[in-house]
Length: 316
Image (cartoon, rainbow, N blue to C red):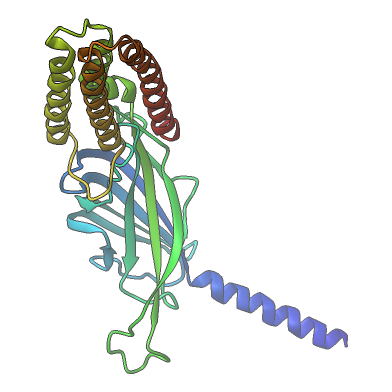
């Protein structure tokens, strides 16, 4: 019984050594990240990466693939074997342009994750990456006037393709590779300033429209004021679209512009209705028109304020 237990421990020990021998410690250091292009959904980065591992030396020169890159340039490849430790160290530098998905539904309160996805062309049975959490980071000297950048997060995620890429020796029709994903989160440093720059004209237009309820009925400005405000909101929307990249989704700024236009349109309808009541000369209808103006002005302001708070709360 003791002999079987000893053999089991021995087998487990050598199994662990085998697994350990297949693991490659992968680290990454971003020296610069720049050119955030929200229109083309890209960013650029300069980085160093390295791999530590035991056993025989493995050639990584040209074997690493950036999955989400449009182009990358490899520089300064170095590989060294330490015979006394039976250990190897590889280091190289990359610079390139990488794809990312900029989610602008929350603009300018949006937060976006910029990722680098790296694989070796050899399957996970041969090359299994383990993140070097301790030494992987983004350079603390990187500074932006408009952006806040989170610390670097690095993780290893095995990825399985639904094809063996024609490898007749593969046991099945799928193939798995070890993938390193390094990511940072970027957010705007002064989103409220940007927000009010883009919406100040919209809110002024709404206020001017509500003021029309306080204008004397026989004044032409009573109807022309909300009409002019409506055109101002439409014009402001075109300005926003020239600043914010187009999106197939309805953004927060789109929602604010749409609800403002609808509210101003309702104000125009109510003004026309109450002006008609006052022009009738009937005392009861005239009193009713003033009541409608007061009640509607209060209701439309409450509805508009509530919608804006509802639209903004999720984006803080």
